[in-house]
Length: 533
Image 1: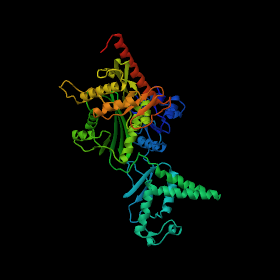
Image 2: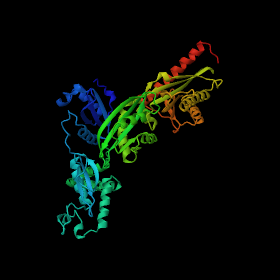
Image 3: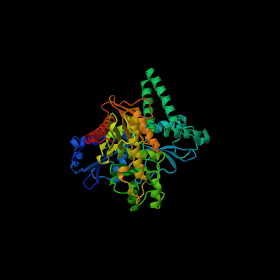
Image 4: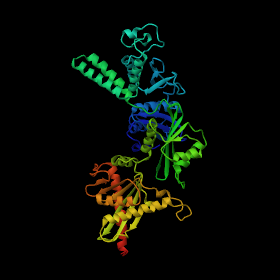
């Protein structure tokens, strides 16, 4: 395959190499996906990896929060798929957890999953997984001593050495009551959950470390530093493995132009084992997301839960497939769905679109941008233009021209209000049209935009807002003023000033310039043809 470096983000994650039959042949991890894949395709890599690069036909990737999360995901995907060129991580070993047992006087233990993803320890609360073994071991030992948690398998009839060392309060002989011991266990649980209790402990250790350093007690300071670093692993929440026991799919769907993209993460017994990516051409169907999922799951076994980003459409799927599996993710499930959504966005959505989403603080990427401009000469032959961009590129078949009819003279604000109002009144009519009433099927191009962009300053922006409000529409709205290239939005007092090199600003300028070019061309043609209406 021909490697295009810019297609891959400079983010941590896992990459999945596939052959011409779309079979996974190698899975790897990276702190920086772009740099790591560049090494693979430049030949500057391990000989064993370079030897099979000629078989690679496609590279998919999944973006993770950090390198540790990528490490866990890589291990689980390799165990699930067993790619032929992965020599390591194919065994049934997993990263370790910490477990608090469900006993009268609970213990803190290290735990692992077996080959089926199950824990050998029964009736316990599990926390993790944790990647760095040495830090985990230091933490387990330190936490046992700090919270006086027993380590004996069975309660002895006499206090043991741990009591005399000050590491345990000897519940075996009644030196601590059940209620007080349970209070210690609850405090330990708050630490393992990464809550404020643990942060207060770290703060206390940092103070003791500074004191030790100031008194030149460097050995003690080093021990305290190691304890702090070990405890900090509890505050880095990973999203790859969970203590859920059911089988679950996480499906994020996104339309980009005429294609529906789907990213699936398949969690089995709480472990993400498999990933799939599907690209489906959108044809005449009104709800391609529902059509795709109904077809995908109709021919196979449904897991216990399927989480999607579809909202109310899940009810339609549950009804069609006679199930209650389709849900909207909540709580911890949102973190897993975010992995799927970020990975799909990074793979399929132009970087300039994602940057504009970030700059304007939009809830979703502005995949469809419609930009408006007015062209007039002393109020004569006034026209408006609307250009439509999809995923950062012009969609010229959906450009529109407007002859200004309801405004006389030089009133740019009123002209903008008229053009914007006419455009979205038409889209509303198309969306509400019923087959057989003259409207026919709703065309794919009739989707409402993710961002309405206006050529002009605050005056034009507010005129467009008035037009949308008159139609009962709430769309993301912004305008760009010439000269200073400032971007105005309705929710901020001051304009947004982006660097000239910013990819988001360049996209806005591209949209604005294209709308201006289209309007000027239409206006010139009207003047040349002698139109005066």
